[in-house]
Amino acid sequence: MNFQPYPFERLRDLIAPIVPKKKQMLLTIGEPQFQTPSFIQEELKNYTSELRFYPKSAGEDYLKKAQMDFVKNRFKVSLESSEIIPTFGTREVLFNLPQFLLFDKLNPVIAHPNPFYQIYEGAGIAARAKIIYMDLCKSNHFKPFLSDEDKKEVDLVILNSPNNPTGATLSLDELKNWVQWALEYDFVLLNDECYSDIYKSSPPAGILEASYMLGNKDFKNVLSLNSISKRSSAPGLRSGFIAGDKNILREYQKYRTYIGCAIPNPIQRASAVAWEDIQVSEKIRQKYAKNFQIAQEIFPNVPIEPYTFYMWLEVRDDVDFTKKLYEKEGLLVLPGSFLGRKGVGKEYVRIALVYEEEITRDCLKILKGFLCDYLKKGFDA
Image (cartoon, rainbow, N blue to C red; front, side):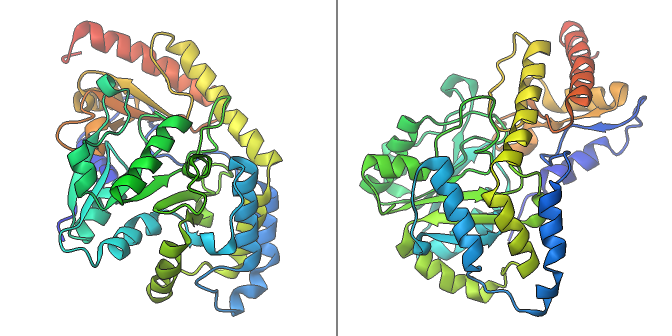
């Protein structure tokens, strides 16, 4: 298998020769910097005695219920137990589900956004699939697109709405269109919704919601993926789920019994209370909403999507900008081209707004000052 280096490996190599003139501040990784709520930590501690039990690969009923309640509260969709599987985060699913789905295909084809979370591409490589890169750019408002010929050919389409890194989000009607195409052209549609609870004011729509409202109430060919990491500031729990088409999930669950991704019981206990929580996760969401507000105040002429917790900032030359910003100010951002292929993203950098508001404000003020000087002076600034 010929995997590409991970974006952060490339970034580490890029900045290795550089000695920043100021204190380093990371604006790169999408890792919440807020404390994990204490009630989640306490639940984890309270059930350490359950480490003596082997965890079920299908997950415990109490965790399934908590996740089903989340889907009902958040997306107004009631699921059956057969329509959801608790998972060990979402990264493992994004990597192994395509291999499961495409195993029996003679010439498998997968489509995913470009730029993208690199696991999508890795899954395609591992499945020996042809990859269709759905380029996201300013001219298409950073929305994924497939031609009719592509739709006829593709076996699996991965969407990511709200999108990492651009923040662009598909409307309910746009999601309905994708569901309709999945049924019409008979491909599996998976939406990675890990940022569905990070928004400024109006929650984004979900793929299960769109499927149900379209009349596809058994979610044929439709799957949703979600995680506790962002909404509860708890990426270390590695708690996610996949939900939707029960015919796909029934066979996928058999496959999962062989790959050893069962969630340890104390983590399931802590995850369940996190999924059931509404109040604390809302306070966390409001912190990100405040960061959106700060970013828009400091960059009034820059379009900043009110979803995910990223700025997709246009800078003309992503690699040059990243190196010079790091050297002069100590701020480290992620070059957009490290997240894309075929040159997509090379005019942008991704900035993670994951700190408390005062830190966010200070960093963005420094960033704006540098950006203004950089664009005025050109690439030799």
